[in-house]
Amino acid sequence: MPKARLVIISAAVMGLLCLPFVFMRARPAQVTFHLAKATPTGNTVIVSFVSSNEVEHFSTSGLLPVALERMEDGVWKQCVGGVCEFSVTDPVYDTRVACVIKRLPGSLRLIAERRTELTGLQSLELRARLWLSGNKSVSLNPFDRKKYRTIRVFVSEPFVLP
Image (cartoon, rainbow, N blue to C red; front, side, top):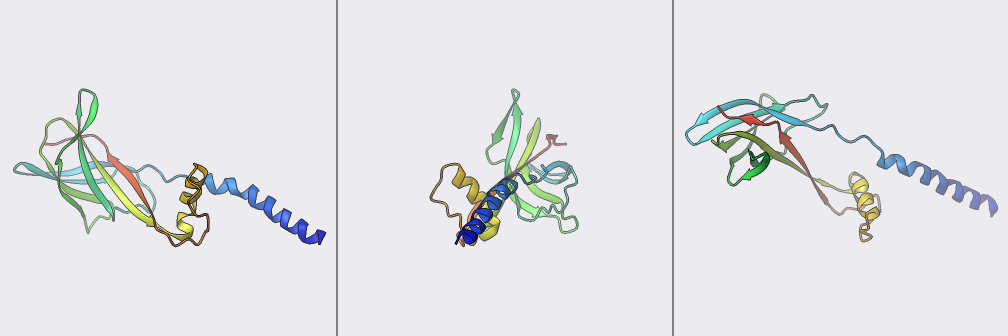
């Protein structure tokens, strides 16, 4: 019996020692975009953005432009109806995002989002963070089939339309 108890205690200690490494993994690199091309079409402009920094394994699929912001008095303010048509991924370049925006003066920037659903082991880190922040209703079962949605926001570098 003491041998079984020693094995259980050893396993628990090893688990506790490894737990911090789960939360200390490297965060994904910040991705930014810059204006590559702008084609005026009346009151709107078709804009195309490319990744400003080379991030390994980054794809624009699922990236959705959601807002256009304009610099006013030193503060970024959202332009209502700034994005007229949603994202069109350029089939030639996987790192390019295109959309139609209002023609506005001044310094602008585009806000895009990527929404993903995580289940099972993919969502374990997110569930552990929620549980540790006080949400005890979250399951810590690594094989939980409940879907958890995450939203990651991407911001373009400031640009001025021609």
